[in-house]
Image 1 (cartoon, rainbow, N blue to C red):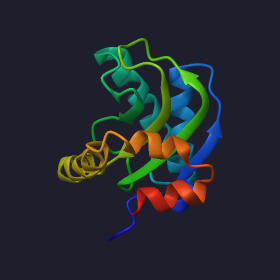
Image 2 (cartoon, rainbow, N blue to C red):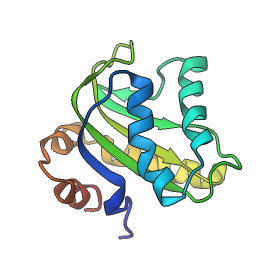
Image 3 (cartoon, rainbow, N blue to C red):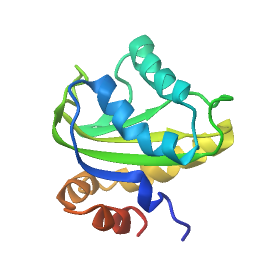
Length: 144
């Protein structure tokens, strides 16, 4: 199986004072890797401001994303696990894991979302993610 998420795109033990900051923190590896431009991070935040916290897919887990655009240079994924609860002000609060998805086109976007959804169909998967004590352990779980 292909690597679903790169090792250097996973961060554990992060902190954020707001859901906006949590998205920025989770997206940092994508900006550092050159996969996205910083404006894409703001578009992810704007999407939540406009549409509500639809990205909080289940308790403890949010999937930040925005529509494909010129500010996405390469389809990529990042993941941040936070030490403290993040409030998105929705029924699935609190959030501890924020995954960021960036895709260059609609087809890649849908394919990536399906891959993530398949893992999340196992209701214990988020708990397994939270139980990881190292970035390597989480990398191994995500790419299993």
